[in-house]
Image 1 (tube, helix red, strand yellow):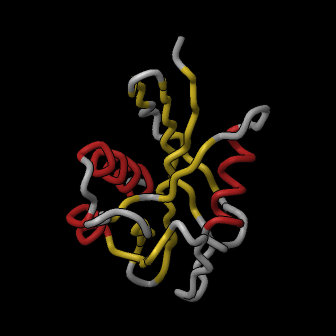
Image 2 (image 1 turned 135 degrees about the vertical axis):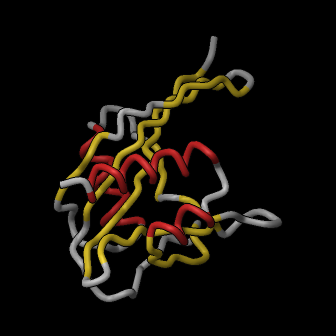
Length: 140
């Protein structure tokens, strides 16, 4: 029987004079860690909204989200005896200074405009998610 885990992938964005920018993070571990979105587990008996708030505020040190957009791109896969479902969201945060308070699992974080963010994301699913988010928030 597979162990079921739910996770969130959060594409944080903010608006400034140049338009939207997206937060990219690099993991501390690994030989060649790549850039990606904020991600983390949904704890047992935790609502998705609570997990999003926890990841934004505690793991990255940013103010509470202003708006959360369901990207409607759940991913589901099996890894041995582990079943994983990831839920992708766009999360608007206030435009604050660039100082981030990162958990130790993150070695580096930076804000990037869409073209830079797209190019630096390693996974095709992350590129598709940031493209969908960018399209939705700039279409209004």
